[in-house]
Amino acid sequence: MGFATEFNSVCKFKSEQELYELLEYGRGKMVKKGFRVYPTGQKVIAYAPNNEAVAIVKIVVSIAEINFQGEEVTEVEMELVRRLTEEEARIQTALAHEMFFGERNETNQT
Image 1 (cartoon, rainbow, N blue to C red):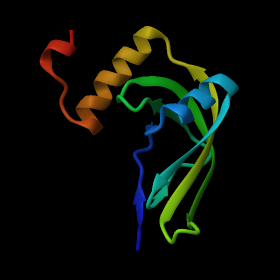
Image 2 (cartoon, one colour; image 1 turned 180 degrees about the vertical axis):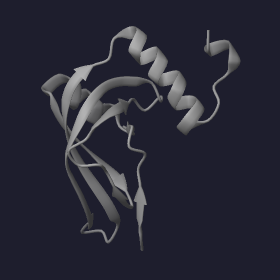
Image 3 (tube, rainbow, N blue to C red; image 1 turned 30 degrees about the vertical axis):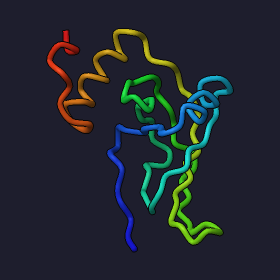
């Protein structure tokens, strides 16, 4: 049992519904498997399930716990700071693929 540290600039959604709620209502929550440490109080880039950068969010709460099923989970609550412009999203997505998610197909980088 241990904590995994998230990259300070990455907040990746696995669920389209969680991302939709954040973008629609300005606040949202996501649940991750395992104990993780998120930078509470910091602003980070939020990524859609397809690894596309979509917004800047502020991490408000990060709670690591064992749920009723005995699983280690981390709940992260965040506030939407703003959506990224098309140009910002393109650049952040390209950088994230190089740094965090692995190389992109060369034809997609133009």
